[in-house]
Amino acid sequence: MTMISLNLPKAELKIKWEDGGLKVFDALRNKYVRLTPEEWVRQNFVAYLVNHLGYPSGLMGNEISLTQNGIKRRCDTIVADSSGKPLIIIEYKAPDVEISQEVFNQICRYNSVLRAKYLVVTNGLNHFCCRIDYDSELNITFLKDIPLFKELI
Image 1: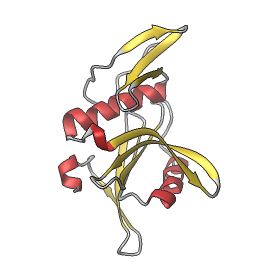
Image 2: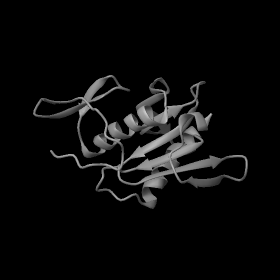
Image 3: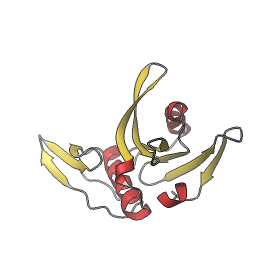
Image 4: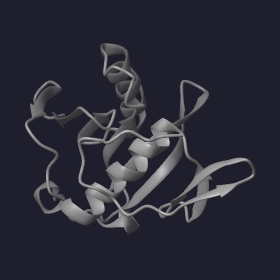
C-alpha cells in the first residue's frame, strides 16, 4: 500500500507489517491500528497538531464514543480543554474523499451532542476549521488556518 503525500509536514510514524497488513502506532490510543488511507490522514494530522501547533496529546483522544439520538457513534478525534470539555472535534476522510456538505453534516451531528467550540474536517490535502459562537445565534466563522493550541484557550 502506497500512502500519498499529504498537505502536512512530514511525520515520523511507527509502521509495521503484522497479521498480513500494515499497522501504524497510534500514540493517543497507545496501540497499533490498521493503516488505512483515513488512518494515514489521522496519524499525520495528530502529529501536526502536537508537533507543530502545540496541542497537548494528553488532552486529545481518538475514536471517542458518544450517543446521538440513541445511536452509538464515534468521533475521529476530540481535543478537550483543561477541564475535559470538548474543545475541538476533528473528522478525517481519506485523501481521495472530497470534503462535501455531507461531511460537515456528519461533524455537526456529533457536535449537537458535544457542543465543541471548533470543528475541523480534513482529508489530509484540504483542511477546514470553523469556530462556533454559541452566544450569537450560532454564528459560524471559517478560519484561514488551524489555530495554535495557545490561541484556543
